[in-house]
Image (cartoon, rainbow, N blue to C red; front, side, top):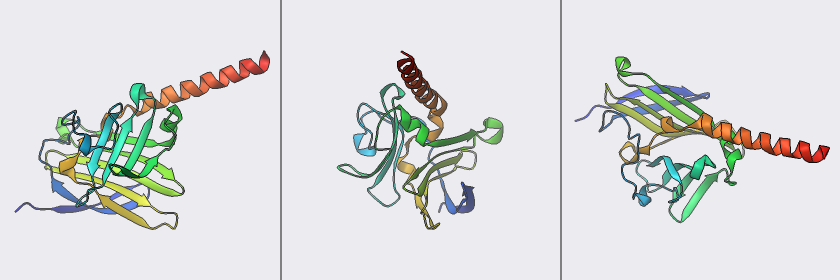
Length: 196
C-alpha cells in the first residue's frame, strides 16, 4: 500500500492541508502528453494548453490556456459544453495583467523540487491554482485554493494523474511585457492624436 503524507501549505494567506500523493513520473507532466487530447482540456484547438487537469473524483476540468502569439491568458473551469467560469471574459492582451504568477524550481541537488501558482481575483473571490512537486520523494500537490469574500477558504484537489502541462512553463513576464507594450502604444497613439 502506498503511503500518503500530509503537509500544511501557506499561499497568499490561505492555509491548506494538502495530501501528498506519489507521482508516477520523476516530475509533473511539463508538456502535454498528446496533442489530440481535446477531452482533457477546455482549451480550444487554436490555444496552447498551459496546464489542464480534472478535479479529483469529478468530471470537471480546470484549464489555463494561452492564445495564439500570447495574445491572451485565460482560466476555465467546468465541463465541455458547460464552462462555469472563464476568467477573464475578454480575451485580449490586457488579460495578462489580471493574473499574478509565481514559480520556483530547484535543480538536481535539491531533488528537482518546485512549485508554481497562478492567482486572480474575480468578484471578490480569490482563486489560486497551485502545483508543487518533489520527484526525489515521489510526491506532488495539485489544487485550487478559493478564498470567498466572507473569508471562508476551500481547497479543491486536482487529479494528478490527469495533469497536462504545468504553470512553471508559463512565459508570464513575456506575456505581461507584450500587454504593457500594447498599452504604451495605445497611450502614445492617444497622446499623438491629442497633439495633432
